[in-house]
Length: 177
Image (tube, rainbow, N blue to C red):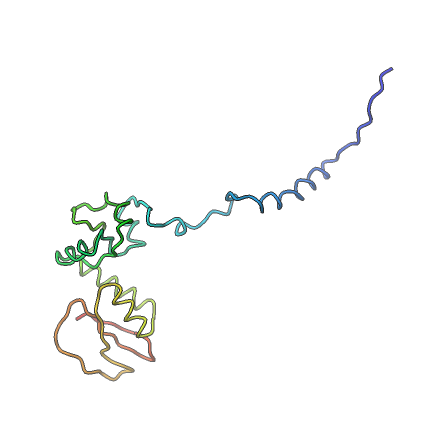
């Protein structure tokens, strides 16, 4: 006569309950990304990012990237817009410098001015903040009218200078010259 050990039957519901009880603890302690927790593409962009094309690079550097300040100045003298100076980004994307002037994905000066003006007006900034933003981009600025009242300005023409129209402390329009 065989003696069999008596086993307690395990139901499917008990197994599912056990799995569900342990699942949150396991995923909370995991250092690895879980399905559905993928980061946006902007989070992966850093100075070592290599772009496949100038179109992709211009999403983050709209006027290109220069290896040095002197390279950027030479490119401006050759008719290009002010590029952002960043040696690490340039090094990672040197293949995009097709003309060898040490500025990757540069744009013409006219296109750079047009893009910059559109960016500035889209942001709707106060005068001081807009002035700082303009200077950081490599351009000059002045106030041409304040709350509809024209201001005294010189008649000289400077292609890299924006003249702001300010209403209620915010830049509402800007013209080059």
